[in-house]
Length: 513
Ligand code: NAD
Ligand code: MLT
Image (cartoon, rainbow, N blue to C red):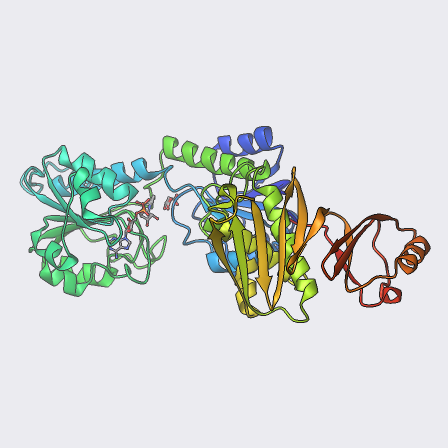
């Protein structure tokens, strides 16, 4: 079933009403909203839905994804997809998409709020007032002016934090292994190697994803290299600052305060950090603004509507090769590539090893990756699993098929060649109809339209016998083509038995793309 065939969507977390409204009005999608479903209820209901939209509360586990036999898309209205088992989604042929920009400003503003709060202990002082105190000495703070802020992770949020804190005349330095120093210099952040960051900072804020390489990025060793009294902020993901190391540093005075919006366990059962007087903790509020929630809800809905209308694939985190695959112009090429894969599969006794996809013509210049996925679908036509553009290359590799692509600038003709195991097929489009142009080294005089059912022979064919067998099966011969030693017949209906036609192969091209 096509990835864009999305009729029913479940929203299982609390989302802005705009999300369901857009899905219904622009996508014609039936939407069910049941925030707070238990994991077991989600597993038992998910089979009825083509799409699932979540924030961070729903855990989209491998069990949920496997139970969702109709699922084609999981939409995460927010940035981090750590509550979605992305590998399991890919294996199950399910697109995972997020809205990475929708809440960046809100998360950045909250980070700045925590830096200000730490510098003057604003929440602690406000809370002491509610207890009837007037503690002017206890809450002596320090200015941000002239202090150094270290920003680890200089992507969307890190950049916005830097720009805002510069208006307090903070010096902003940072580290990011991907964003080049000349890019961060443009927004006022001088990059240093991590080892040189620690000793310079009065405040350190983290804005990375939670990865094996960022888990415990600020740990005992890092704290020991920091200025005494350094203050740290985590509005990214629990665990980037090692929580036990932080507690030790707070107790020893090496760390002078922490602002935490996120925790390794949410809500945290271990209350030691939350209850520490120098910690300002929040219940994961980075994206909790009306603006961010509206933006993320609207963006995820619009992305799904684009997919349903087969206009574009935006925000997919597990199918980057497919970004260009969902447009009316590319759809016929995907159908052709799948058909080419099927043809090659039929021509070879066993499909394994390397299959080469060669594109030619300017229109196919950057199409190699998604056409490889479409060819792999055709090659895996006998697979028992649900194979689609998301998981076909993954399953191909599992079964020993490696599909690689190459673009040839030599040809003026726009065409697609698929070769492997000593066989080669070449196809193109006639209007929007996928056509076979060539098998092996000889071209067909007229292209063979790749729709419906084809019969294929290598060598001579008994035409009288063919007409007789077709008549008995109430099928009709529509066209007959010759390419060197190959003969191809288009017939109006499939035959239940091709054995009377000798070494004839029957290929049904009811394509899925
Ligand atoms: P982003 O992808 O734009 O930026 C992350 C940056 O981290 C990237 O530039 C990457 O190169 C960098 N990075 C990766 N490994 C690193 C390392 N070892 N050291 C330093 N930098 C490293 O992401 P973003 O949109 O800015 O989001 C940042 C974090 O904030 C994510 O974890 C996201 O889930 C989280 N977030 C939290 C909230 C919240 O409610 N608290 C809201 C939105 C986003
Ligand atoms: C995110 O990654 O987008 C945030 O953690 C916000 C959220 O989950 O609400």
